Image 1: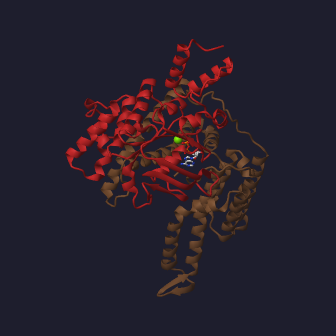
Image 2: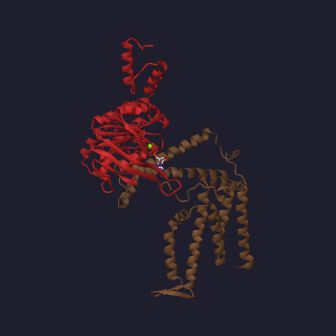
Image 3: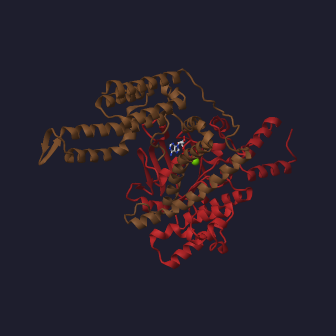
Length: 267
Length: 284
Ligand SMILES: Nc1ncnc2c1ncn2[C@@H]1O[C@H](COP(=O)(O)OP(=O)(O)O)[C@@H](O)[C@H]1O
Ligand SMILES: [Mg+2]
């Protein structure tokens, strides 16, 4: 129950130590390019760079695989459909009366690569950065938008509160389910309506607790004179270090590569 | 008949960086009819241990026997009726519209006739001391102490033979706390075996028949309160203490140089002092 997708894994790698802002920039650049990739060379380059960051981060492969698992089934089904129904020009081989085309194979590989790399890039960020650091970074990066009255601080604050509460809710849900089953509650009914109804003893205490926590939180914030982001200083000041320099250089090299590929070499 | 835990080992989140061995090499027997206190520093595995006894957690290795029957997936529901489990802050799990319905919740699955349900709710309420005029009130209108009693009733309706309570007195005012401890004795006298977790050594000394000390997932000591609370150095070594009166008489003995027997309850302390005064005061 407690272990959730993309949960921060402490580490000492260069990628861990880099500032959340550089990591967010890197992740966004990476994700945008992955979505824009068209040719196989571009895919290759994106994969290589994702691999580089993966190796730098020192996150064990099994966590990456774990984060891929939820979409794996979907991917397999789509691939099967692609292979069977997509009509191309060159037939690779035939399964029964279905022809599998070369184009279908490439299309499937590209699609799988694309989705996998998107997930891997995003989870590399969340595995190596605490949620507090991520929101801090987002707030900082959105700050210029204050000119158009964009509430960057408020949004970041809401995000960090939400992120703070999610694991708490998960634990709380776990505990209430255990407590109610000790009292004889049944949660594994086959009947859908009964199943929904059986969660009432979980949901009501959960909501009562959530409202109470929210209320306590707002009182606590108010009693510490919280009044928005204006003039607020940080306990942990974000610093630009040599790790960020390295990461941003990688990002820059990558961007240059992308632009050259797309415009000059056209590969 | 008794509860037996044999060679229990349990690890939270194995194979992750958050891996935590919560229980290891754990053997324990809980005898029928006793009040057993489970003490240990925070995070020592007390709650994890309780959750193994009613099958909320399944050991990685080892077995749990309830009255000679091994706890498996199949007999879970049957065994849970034998073992009541009052969570820490059980009042947080109340949810029904009325106190009566909340107490009766545990009987829903048993499909008992209505008058049997009524009788059981009233019996539980009487035993725990929830007055009848509360039964039709909303559970959210009660005071903290009342809510906790109602929650305990909700566990007692299934007439468990064993009752586990995780820090039943925490967060109550002194009067509520004392009432809770008296309640534990009431349960025992009504034939229920009581297992409770407590951080308060005074409460343990006054209430328990036997004490089990758990530290870092292992049982380090077990014995009568007297046996346990005379091991002052061991207890303070793992971050626990002895009852206040024990400390008081130990200090008194140290300062005055008078030999004083180990005293672990207020009654014993009182008896000792009365004895001393009747003999003309502490000899100096
Ligand atoms: N759901 C959980 N996931 C991971 N670790 C847990 C979980 N519950 C408890 N632990 C850890 O297991 C150890 C024992 O916990 P617990 O049995 O709750 O201790 P106690 O009740 O004695 O305070 C603690 O170190 C705790 O952090
Ligand atoms: Mg506990």
